[in-house]
Length: 390
Ligand SMILES: Nc1ncnc2c1ncn2[C@@H]1O[C@H](COP(=O)(O)OP(=O)(O)O)[C@@H](O)[C@H]1O
Ligand SMILES: [Mg+2]
Image 1 (cartoon, helix red, strand yellow):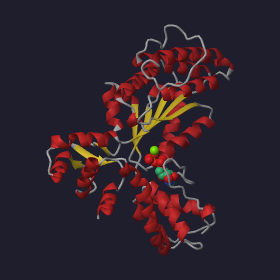
Image 2 (cartoon, rainbow, N blue to C red; image 1 turned 90 degrees about the vertical axis):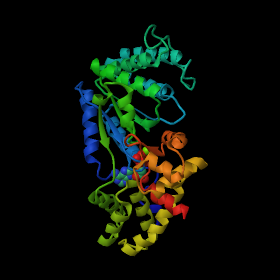
Image 3 (spheres, rainbow, N blue to C red; image 1 turned 60 degrees about the vertical axis):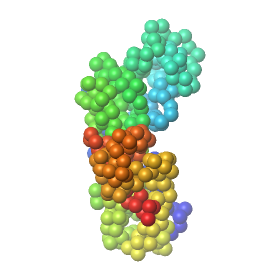
């Protein structure tokens, strides 16, 4: 069918036509945000899951909803190479400018900007990637001692006070939270803690790989009770059907039951795979309804595209020794696997391969579900590796 009208959207962060099966988590996060705006206590929400399950598009959806309610949202993606102060500062500035449009909060917003000016000039010494400059007289003695733990709490508190003045919540959204180093995660958690102690309407909505639970837990002794961790995983068969039927129906196209069942079983309900299968089934089909034969023919295209993009981009980023490690893991099956078993499979000692293992964890290729164990962060990565190793 006409590829111009193809309603599927495979791709990292590409919003699907239908955000299937996520109503509960979206509602819970929205409730937390609204409670925060009202000055009621609520936990910070952390969405955790493997790659391609839909964390980024969930954050995007929540952001749109929160902004349409007038909440003050800052959304950043923590990349491997930029610091939290550098990412956050320009967005906090925008947030304060937005708040300053509310008459009742104007003075607090201007004060926030002066605190931010002090924060930026004090923090620049250590985090030289900060690019924003604020042409304002900094407020002396707040957020300007040059210690992130102290200053970040001051600055977020000042923005929180301004948000409170405008009766809105400050919603800090951070994607790929697992990439924040402990030296920045700890201060962030401390800042959130200070805001809740002072009953300021500041809330975090984070997303990342499943290991962020451990990172957050290790960052501060009180961290565990500040956060509500939600696992984002595969869609149920019914939600998978919705994710396929609804975009097709919007284009006046149907799909047979056996074709739908095949998409459910072939994708295991992984959102990224659903989009890719849907896209190719559409391209292969000549007219409505999409049939089982179409889906069968689409499978090869879908897999080839996934191999080249979703799986391939990750595999391209690893060194030769890291590849050997991943290959040995893949031979052992889907995992999680004991580090010791992988070392044995490679014919090496656990100590010898430990640095490779940590690099792969750092790169976000692997995560450690429990002590001595590792697993892939990409669903069905073992099958991919076995496919390309043949
Ligand atoms: N609930 C959903 N229903 C249908 N498709 C989804 C859903 N969530 C995500 N997707 C699709 O899955 C793909 C991956 O989403 P993304 O948010 O980038 O995942 P993650 O951030 O977890 O790696 C995108 O193509 C997106 O359109
Ligand atoms: Mg993502």
